[in-house]
Image (cartoon, rainbow, N blue to C red; front, side, top):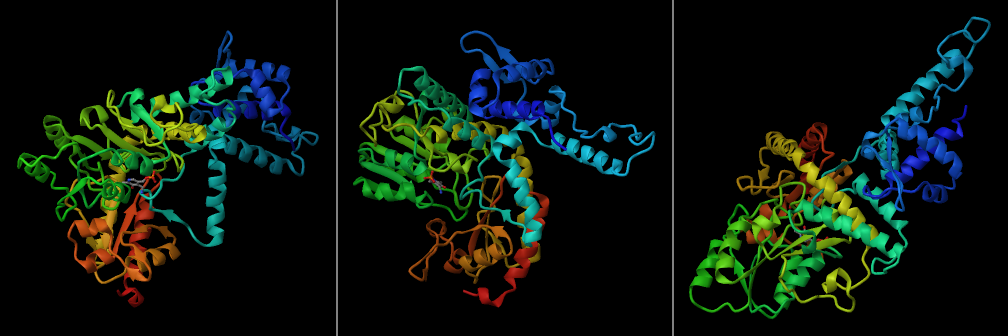
Length: 521
Ligand code: PMP
């Protein structure tokens, strides 16, 4: 049994196009070269693919083919059919059971079944699966039961698994050879990848593309803003360390804004300080959009209204928000905003600082004209391409937020029913749809995390352990939580792949683990 070359070439060529950035039309000569396929044969195959409505062609210098539908909506069976590939591999499996003098041959059922299984498999796999690595994921998932453990990943606030679309865009970008700063056509192609991604990131947060500056991640974005020559920085104890540490190092007067027990920053106290008459000079308010440990959403718009009136700048760390709540940079009216690709299904080590137009922020990294002289260094092309693709998916994923909120609420109900001592942290505050912070007073979070890991669940501890001494999360401390409540705090953060079964299994594991005496603090 063997597939003909026509079918295989058709699938390979279509996968090649699917792996390029979606705006590009791809000349057949490039596909032929990259995939080592005969050009004349490809030309013949593409007549059929075009006739079947799977590709569109563009003429002229930048002529070539692009997919007529998203890669996720084109199955391998579609491509095979357009290439007139037959997945019935032997003469006796063609329908009539007459292979042996009007009777079915000995192996007739075998080949017929193989044809049916192959057709079903090809129909179940899309081009996006082929280029996005989902097939490897399927293979792992199938292998898992025999390995005896099903993993449930509930740590999306630490990092979200790479989306297939982001991986495909990154793989395609690795084949783009030029330096984006070069003026030749290789350079312009690389520049095109960056600008397409910039538009996708801008669209995700309702900013202008000119306001998006790519950085190495949110830690750099935050450091950049915090390194400006401020006289006063208003900040609260629930901010991420990448805000707090550079704020302390800045030399400015750092004013700690109090936080309510439910995790909400009492930002109105900033007004009291500013209106008291004591000068604040060049002043910054750093207020996150949503907290990474509790998911609590802050009212940034209320702060910017006041800040604008009194000449203060506002920076918001929005790392945890994309794909979970709609982000409107223009409407928020903040001066700067940090994003990180790996929290929204993109790669690690790439992020952005959104800087409102005409705000002349001094560069943190100098020595090159990239990013319109705002951030020096040759761009991380593959990272940026992956960020752009993930941003596009994250924007669409907002529609799934109510389902995820429903699962999170169910999780909180189920664990409290299973173990009544469970406390839900910040349950009454407005929160991200995907985040549940649970604690078992008197238990140690680190031990809970290890037990849950052994049971197949990936979650994070809210508290941190250093030099053998159990510390308490600075977020819990800022919220004024008691030590024994804070010490058992764990964060469960759901994602697009979380199911009802995952939640039920988690609640069962929670019940089993909480009864374990060895967990006592
Ligand atoms: N801010 C928040 C709220 C975060 O959760 C994180 C990541 N944990 C960061 C900033 C830092 O982002 P990055 O990993 O891109 O440096």
